[in-house]
Length: 239
Length: 188
Ligand SMILES: [Zn+2]
Image (tube, rainbow over all chains, first blue to last red):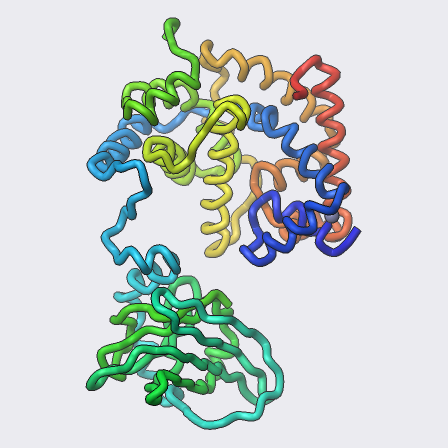
């Protein structure tokens, strides 16, 4: 029995993220105990749903469902088709972030006014303790980067470093966002050097530090004043 | 209804001939079963309907290939339904805590469609076996299998130490398995 064995239930109910899932599956291939647990579960899968008490479906459900399916019908090639008219490459890499950012366009402009004092603090910090660390994945091209949230005792800072970024024109900037449940907040703005590298250290105020951020993203914005994401997502990762 | 094709033939018509009527026959055959199952999982009419819509849309758009190596069509459909409901539950739980108490029993009907004979047969076997479990075991199966909770949440809900959850579920499953076998059911 290892610690992985304790994950078998959450694995079965699909609560593990991709990394945890891969680690568990590796364990599973070598652990008779977990294999037995899952095979017990699978052998009951045919029977357990029948334990549901018969419930009358809501009236009109069939019509609603088939009406919906028919509206999807015109786009029915064999391969999968995006249902929303957003950019294909975005959907492929980070569908959730792209969708979340898009949804949030009407979000919460007011918060930014109170946070603007805190944005864009670009200075070197001494690293005390890394609380969270993430490799940022590109939505296209070969940009790369990392994001870490660092505890410095008195305050928390978000450090984002990126390289292989495309050159900016005119007023354009790279903007970092932290997201929680799809709501983006500005978390630093940066431009890049001749080699396409850039970084920013963002000091979190108390309200920021307490929140449970689930995603970090970097977008390319037309200027440094975007209070909500307007441009394409370049890099992103779950936290 | 009496002349209905086997599920696998209907499924083939759906994916190879884009036969909407075949899809509808499958839907009508399993609507009540998968709705009841979804409802037992989500305890929510709207969420159940959305989940079923998603399942049939996936089927129609061939996003969920089925073949007979995956077992019976009905089992496969139920597994797909469960996974879709788990997704919906996960999204919902991110935003709110939900009372996992069996409620709304008013909507339960007595009648089972005659053409789902297997529901009658398997239903009575598994229901008897379930009610043969100790009450706390029934509860834990409900929380784990039907509500799809995390181990952590089950521990909290049942006021049981995290480390003992797995053992209890395992024991309940063993009982169910043995009981079903004893009923001449359904053990592959
Ligand atoms: Zn194990």
